[in-house]
Image 1 (cartoon, rainbow, N blue to C red):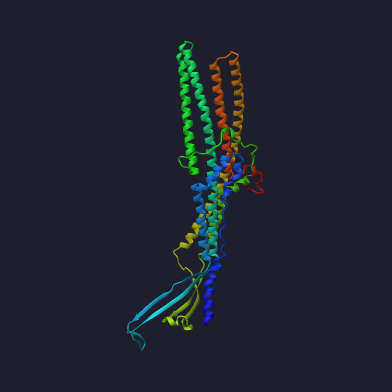
Image 2 (spheres, one colour):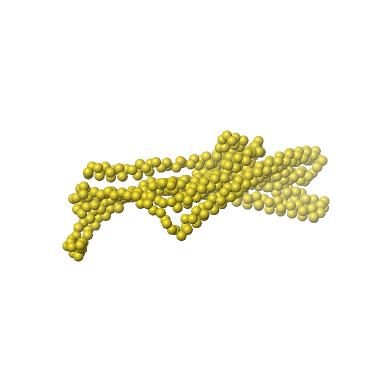
Length: 463
C-alpha cells in the first residue's frame, strides 16, 4: 500500500511539468528582417545603412516595441496555463488544545492536546468540454499578432522617417553650401553697383535693390543653417548620440536616385501593410471572444482532488492509516446573473461589427496612401527631370557669359548675374532630387515596407 501511495505522489508531481512542456515557446521574431536592410542598400550609401543599423541597436522606441512583444508572449503563456491542471501544496502543522466539554451524544471527551500534521497535494482541473479556455488562448495569440505587427509598423515608420531626415540633412548641407556662394556672389554685385553709383553710373534705387536682395539671401542662409541644426539634432535622437558626436553622412554628389521603380502595382500590396494585418488579427481575436461569450452560458465541470498525509504523530506520518486520497467532479452553472452574460455577448458582437468596419476603412485608407505615394513619386521624378534640363540650359548660358566676358563683350557684373541664375537653378535641382528620393521612401512606407523593385512578385513571394 505504501509503495502504491508513493508511486501515486510521484506521478502527480510529474504530470504538470510534462504537460507544461507541450507549450511551444513563442518563435523569436527576427526583427532584423523588419529593418529590410537590403532595400536601403539600394541607395548605395554605406553611411545610411550603418546609421540604420545603429538605430536598430540603440533606438529606445524599437526597444520598447520589442518589450511589448515579449510582454504579450508571456500573456499567451499565462492564458495557456488555464488549459492545464493545477497542483498546489498547502501544508499545515498545528497543536490543538481541546476543552473537556466536548460531547458526542452520551460520550464525553476529556480535555486533551495534540499535534496535527496535514500535508496535502491539491489538484484542480477545469475540463474544457466546450473549448472555452482554448478559445481564450487563441484570442491571446491574435492579440500577440497585433502587437507584432505594431512592432513591424514601428520599424517601417521609424526607419523611413530617419532616412527622410537623413537625406534632408544632406540637402540642407548642399543648399547651405550653394547659399554661401550665392551670398558671396551678391556681395560682389553690391560692391560693383556701389562703385558704379559712386562714379555716377547708376542711381540709388539700383543700389538699394541689390542690397535688399543680399539681405534676403542672408535670411535664406540663416534658415538653411537652422534646418541643418534641427535635422542633425533629430537624427541624434534616433541614433542616441551625445552632444559631442555628429551624424556621419554622405556628400550630395554621392547620392543615388533610384529609377525604374514600377509605377503600377496590384492592390494586393495592401495586404502586406501592418495595419491591414492588425485589423485581420483583430477580427479573428474578437471572433474568438464572441465564441467564448456564448460558451459562458454553459455549465462548467472541474475535477478536484487531494492526495497527502494526515497524522497526529510525526512517527506515524508515513504509515498507511495516515494516507488519504479524495477525488471528485464539481459541476457549476450560473442560474441567474442579472443579464450580465447576455449583455457581455452583445458587447462582443458590437465590437466584432466595429472591427469589420475598421477593416474596411483600413483597406480604403491603404489604397489611398499607396495611390498618393505613386502620384507623388511620379510627380517628384518629373520635376527632377525638368530641373536637370533647366540646370543644363542655365549652365550653357553661364558658360557663354564667361566666354563673352573673356573677349570683352560683357562686364563682370553681367557674369555675376548669370552665375546667380545658375545657382538658383542648382538649388531647385538639389531640392527636386532629394524630394524624389523622399517620395520613394514615402511609397516604400505606404506599401508596407516592401522592396519596391519586388512588388511585381506580389502573387509569388511578397517579402
